Image: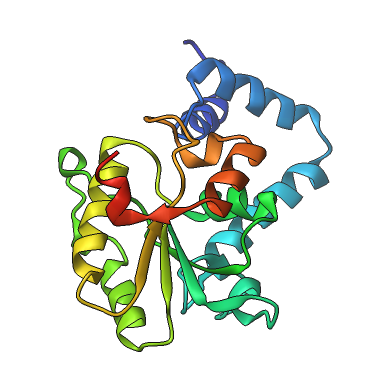
Length: 205
């Protein structure tokens, strides 16, 4: 792809590094921004800079937040004895959209994947174990994607938490095997959360 401007080429190269964005799409986006008033592009740049500089991870659940304790963890309307374990913020958003779950969350930051060099130590599993050790959590809901990596992570967490006095459940298999949680429709996901089953039973399915 030949560029008439080095500045344009640099901008396209940066945008094309975003997931799912190729060089042609990046060029279209950059050219679109060039046609907009400077104030529009400045607002976008400022929003991204502010995000990078000021965004935090909730100290309790590791969800993305503007403050140290996210709105879900600080809410008095949530059941703080139930913790739903998810891979990332997109899964929190998907489950919240179902309006079927009223507990708290624990965001792992990914899933165990030896092929990608991601092990248990790369995730927030240790802080989940510490949370259960404190004794206030009565149920842990494993809500990871129905993939090999998701199932591996589920089983690892199950083995780590099994010695403690806590119910370990998993979302019902209304979600097809191999599906990512964030792409599941709200009705199916809501039913899967509401009809969760003991994790030990799911191992025999």
